[in-house]
Image (cartoon, rainbow, N blue to C red; front, side, top):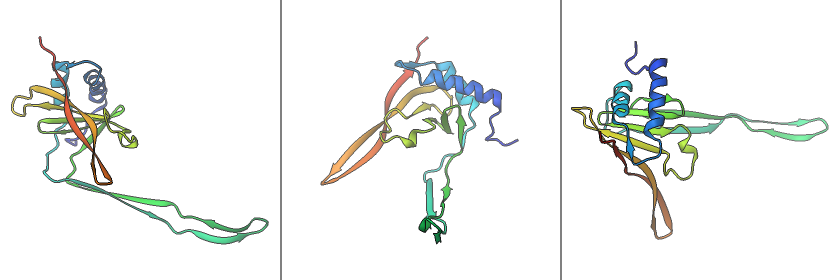
Length: 165
């Protein structure tokens, strides 16, 4: 069995936990966070990781159609994705979850389709040795303008603390 595999029962349990963790409010349930840390397999972390995409159009065709005239058919776009040292992620319901030591990153599955990344992802931070949840941070998109160029970047800011009691 693959160490990165999550069976259906665990996936359903993890989805319910994720919904509770990201629900509105200033705190999150500690027992849910502990259980999620145990459910999602830990991937080794790497200081440097990279994801790239090559896109190109396939061959097209030109010709003449009777009664229509000249036609030009464009080829299909082909896409090749490659990764280097990217930790394994798991699709659970509408979430993509990546677990590296001390971090459980939670992202909405279609987050990359939104122009503003604010609130589209968060991280559950925990102590690696004790697996005790410490806090949750949420993504906030910010901008930096230098002369006439604006750079958008995402920063994780404090969001929730563990429930007391």
